[in-house]
Length: 164
Image (tube, rainbow, N blue to C red; front, side, top):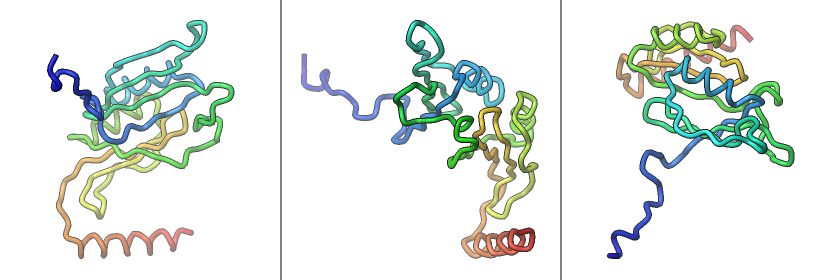
């Protein structure tokens, strides 16, 4: 064997530098939801102890992999359901936001913010999945200059302050 044949890639093919790991009470239900809502491809499912539940799974949404599994006693990771919310969210870029947003809502996501043109140049909306994670879904429709972005952000912040 040559030296090249033994080289292992530090980031395996199909992975990115950063891979999110999501935790659920019922990972099988989450897998099914993400396939229906976001067109996720199921790549790997490893059952939990005694064949119950899902210890580890991997899906692909667009060109990104996501790892997921279930809560386990003694582990520090907890589901958004257990935590009654999540400090993280996701931004899913798609070619047709209106279709993708409807698909997610039809699959059981709750509409949080309706799809509309955003100051940063995307047409986007936000949904909350049945497990407590928030997903922005957007399509880039306009390139904005740094000046336009700053002005849009300031206007948005003023609007938020007036609603508070």
